[in-house]
Image (cartoon, rainbow over all chains, first blue to last red; front, side, top):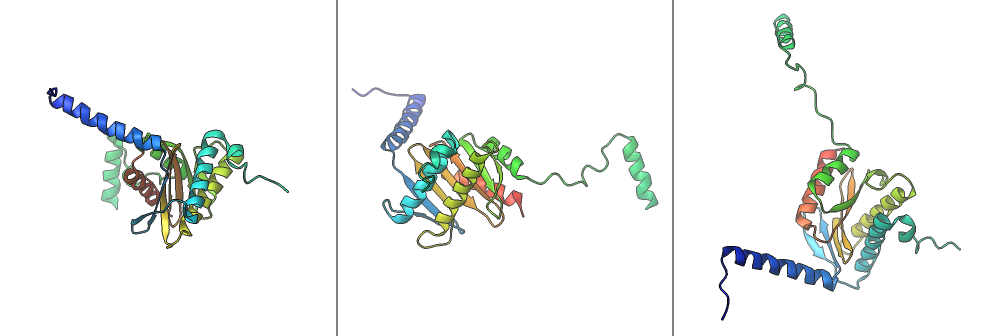
Length: 81
Length: 137
């Protein structure tokens, strides 16, 4: 038999579901790129397109530069002949 | 004029700050913008403000090559966004497994931030746009 839950229990359950869903999305590690024009209209770039890949690459470098320092992020760019 | 002077003297003697309302408050500077963003959102890990020449005006990254590198990456990111198919884009949201990146290019200033994964895009863009407007020209 299903356990009856009060208002608080239902609220906690709902929050738990939202958190679980968020964790699930995070676990999947989906990369999303959305660009917006000046009017605020957004457009999600399709994965594996050239624009998507270029933007993600720079964004990953930016995150690495912030967290680990510029040397790590620019390793791929610092190859000298 | 004489009446105004007498009145102002009375106000001054009463201890009321006479001119504070007439003096404009300090404009938002790039450094203050970083503090402002820090107060607005706990999700922001790092931020960089670029001027119209795409030079770093302020950043949470310490002075040095790292700071310049972050600025260059932010400018490069916004260039990539502007040149994306369709054109005309001036802001971007990138959700990565390791965090989020949000960047907005304004007429005179641009801002890029690195956030934790849970940042809400609508709020983030609202804050970034707001700061760019307050920075003015």
